[in-house]
Length: 315
Image 1 (tube, rainbow, N blue to C red):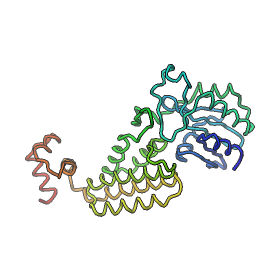
Image 2 (image 1 turned 180 degrees about the horizontal axis):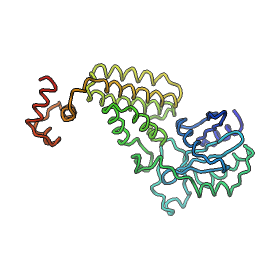
Image 3 (image 1 turned 90 degrees about the vertical axis):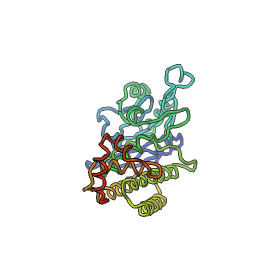
Image 4 (image 1 turned 45 degrees about the vertical axis):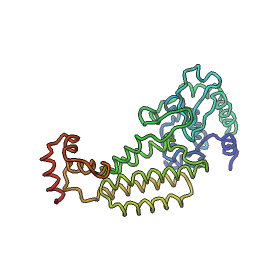
């Protein structure tokens, strides 16, 4: 490993090194929980006219991009804190991201200074400070937009993501699977699910997510036994993987597979009101719910709903 990688590893800053060759961007090295796509997306936003650039998410999370003859080096994401003046500066609600490094600004500037020397870049302390003072503002991740819950210890995966993925499976919209999952992974909001390291943490995230969404497939009509056979197969596949990026890719493949299985269910002849009624029945304790209650919730005439249900379900 080259000296700059050794240095970044030693100070435990997340980083990625990308290089452009023949119109293709290649990931040369990475030490981070953020997916490859996350850094590739940042790379596409980098200005070719600036040697150092900062990207800012939410309150105080940054990624720095250092442009060199050897490609772009990304350092971050990191959450900046402000030493003993932290609370007095009005940053009490800074987001504490699971697996996201927290560092004082002054220390980050010093460490970036050392990195620029190792890379033989003509970037000064003042230039690093100016980049942090004038960042490119990004919309990901932002608490209000992506359901990030904050507390004094860490951030957990918000119900928003589960609901969005659940809706995608129910509607058979597998394009939303990719979009929602990437927002979740790129935000670092996979939760802290294990003390055994990053790999185990991401595996646990995938296993929990798949297992929860299997219930959505069952509610949408997938056979109970078949659904849990699928769940076992999905979990075994996740367990054999060796890197976080592999796991993320397979999670998406599995959720897409589940979505397509639901969409293939023979529900084309079933109207929207009857589908909604079926969902309410499946969600009710012991499937015990009256026609009147369903009609009231769907704002439909009970007799009309009952007749439609019997005709369409062949009762």
